[in-house]
Length: 122
Image 1 (cartoon, helix red, strand yellow):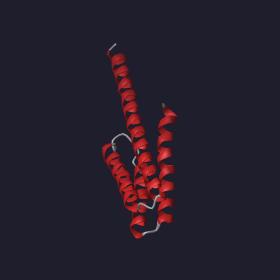
Image 2 (cartoon, helix red, strand yellow):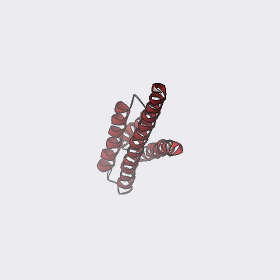
Image 3 (cartoon, one colour):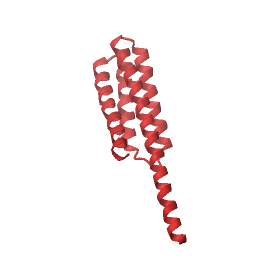
Image 4 (tube, helix red, strand yellow):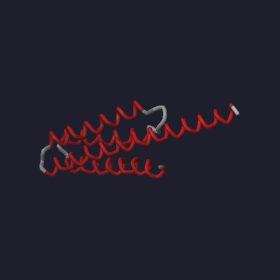
């Protein structure tokens, strides 16, 4: 009887961890998408400092998520997304807006892919 309760406890713990990590990733994806939208709008208005700040905040979110979830999530996706955002920030620093737009588009696709993966399971 103790084994049955132990198995049920383990199953509940796994489900709770899955739900928690899914919620964390969905929230992260929404926040990064909002930062990317802010950056795109700022680029359309030729407000490079605002776009640069939004991109750096998105990269900071990636770093925080990667460091905080290393135990229960795959971190490669967050590394790739952070690399795209940092590359876009560097392009904006150099004044290469078209290249920055390309990296922002790539980052938006990766953020959407991360969000899609969480919605596929729950």
